[in-house]
Length: 277
Image (cartoon, rainbow, N blue to C red; front, side, top):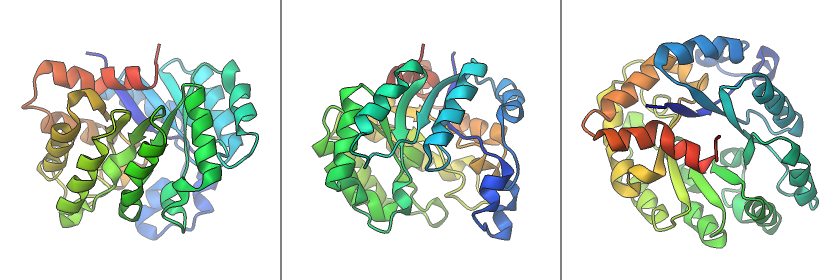
């Protein structure tokens, strides 16, 4: 079985040091680079990864594309581009020289306007992504949920994936309103969902795989095994568990599914969505 981690990051210590993180997040204030991740992939049986933007700068995208050229196991890059730039189409065209550039993401969850993604200039940028066959990662928190289906409705030709199962509060067992939103999103065939970021929405100290399983089961029930993919969210996941613990927790949650579903969720769907070769 080919296993693809559809969501991981890299950064250097100085980037995180600028964020004034609270003491309990201090583990993130250090370098996390390819040579740190590579042995963890081998240990967990992961063959390829999708490298996802860390900060809102085109320089970050360029650095990630350089890393993807150097490390063949980085199979795809989801970068940052300024969607509001009136010349965003030209910017995207300049990335044609980098075949591992597959899509874009923006820190939508951090915008003061929860409906930011529906701004006309943002929608124009998303349309430009769709024209070129790129994807878009939806980074949404509960205050953004009502807009997920609205952007999907506006962009039927854009392949969308919901990161981190949209960040329900697993620690407090937030479920019904979250499940309703996901059920609404399922109506749009271009929308997929990442089983990622779950351990950091659970209780960091006491979570167990059984805490995650109701969310995993509901996502698969809603979207089906063809529209769900695994992501570690490393190194953010280290706030609550090791890379191997995250992989093993998902494997436990998937233990009652047949081999065909596991093959799709753990790798095949990411390969198709991000057009990995």
